[in-house]
Image (cartoon, rainbow, N blue to C red; front, side):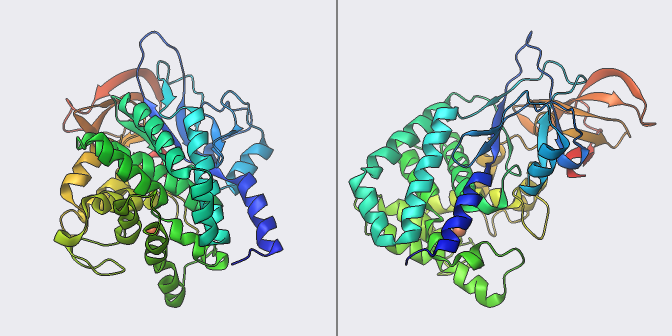
Amino acid sequence: MKKNAYHKNQLNILHFLKVIAIIVISRSKKGLKHQMRLIMINSCRSGMKLARSIYNSNGTVLVGSGVLLTDRMIDRLRNMKVFHLYIEDPDTVDILIDDIISEKTRQEAMTFIHTSFEAFREDPKKFRQVFTAEKMGLRVRDMLNHLVDELKQNKNAMNLLGSICGVDSYVFVHSFNVTIYAISIGLRMGLPEKQIIELGVGAILHDIGKMMIPLHILNKPSRLTDEEYQIVKTHTTLGFDVLRQHDDIPLLAAHCAFQHHERLDGTGYPRQLTEPDIHPYAKIMAVCDVFDALTSYRVYRKPMLPHDATELLFAGSGSQYCQRVLESFRNSVAIYPIGLGVKLNTGESGVVIRNNQSVLARPVIRILENEAKEKITPYELDLSIELNVMISESEALG
Ligand SMILES: [Fe+2]
């Protein structure tokens, strides 16, 4: 399948505009002063200072932290479907958020995803050649080892925002995010290193079959018709058929591509497998895949914040998704990201400043405004102690 010139041009432009999800780890470090707050792009004003860099899909910085945002930049970010961003904010001192993955490893991963996926798009046979000639099998293992090492050092919950991404680069960014989530779950479940690498290879390539789906369907700016949806569904078998023929790729990784849309109750596709026949890796993949989809921008809806997406997944616990996987996931991801503005049932509002590692659903809030929306002397409220206080709204949801 040869790409035509139009698609090639379109891809080049899209590549430039791709923005990768910012996945960051929260770490409170006493004594360090770092102010940031998570806000919606619509609340962003010219002159605000960006507190977290925004990356493109090659893993390079598109807009660096510390940059003073202009109206033009804000417009451009909005066009790239960036919904939330971190800005520096004097009300939230002593909050430090580090990147969970180093720039080098992020870039290594994104370059691999680009090269292999694009080779696959041009011709699955070429993908096999490229994969063998460039010793991709070794490269992907190397890169996954780096990811695993960095994720292992992460003792706290991941403070992520899958919603900060460009819609056009969805498959690439999605593959990267799913890999990070899958490895984190694998580590949390105590899987041996060999299995974690296998799971990582499966995660990074699980959607590669999408490269054989026509671009006008893949990038369609509206809901798919039934017929188009049937075509998209074939990405599972298409990916499996190519991956399983490759000696460098573990067969179980190929099964991640094949089974990641299967559901425990048999309502998934392509084979309507039920719980005992679905491989444990594919059960992990299903949770990561749906979570990333829900927290990413879609033409027909805004991205969900992690706590809403987690709740939705838990509604399918045992019927669609494996409960043990969901629990490991919930224990790895900060469902209330640090810096998120929240409103409480007491009428007060503030910002999430810390996660309680044992109860991630009950973070510590810095209260900034009283019920009359008046600024007050900030104080901290630990929701793991104040059990009657609930989070009723998140500011970033808008
Ligand atoms: Fe998929």
